[in-house]
Length: 119
Image 1 (cartoon, rainbow, N blue to C red):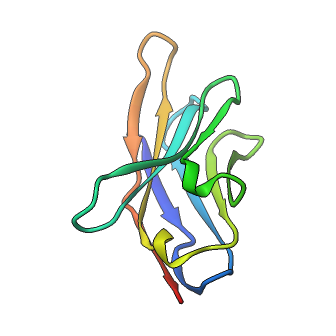
Image 2 (image 1 turned 90 degrees about the horizontal axis):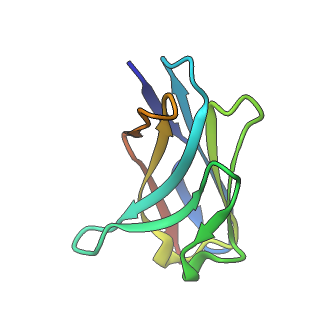
């Protein structure tokens, strides 16, 4: 059973930085692809950043140049480095990873971590 544990959220002032982590366990397979999403109450659930199996990344326009998605060499932990944070980045952030054999890849979600950016 794959489990994801997120960490790294918290309260930070505008202009500050946070690094979110998402550690996967319970699978003998490494992470194939990954993504970070965020949810603000009353607003659309949105994709913040993703990375495919080949390492290609994609970012929400509003976070380009400020956020960086990455993974560790063991490909069991996913990160989201968030710099120059703005109050509008305040949200619950969720990681999603794709793990499994090539013909049976599955999505797994983290529990969410709150990020609050004060002005």
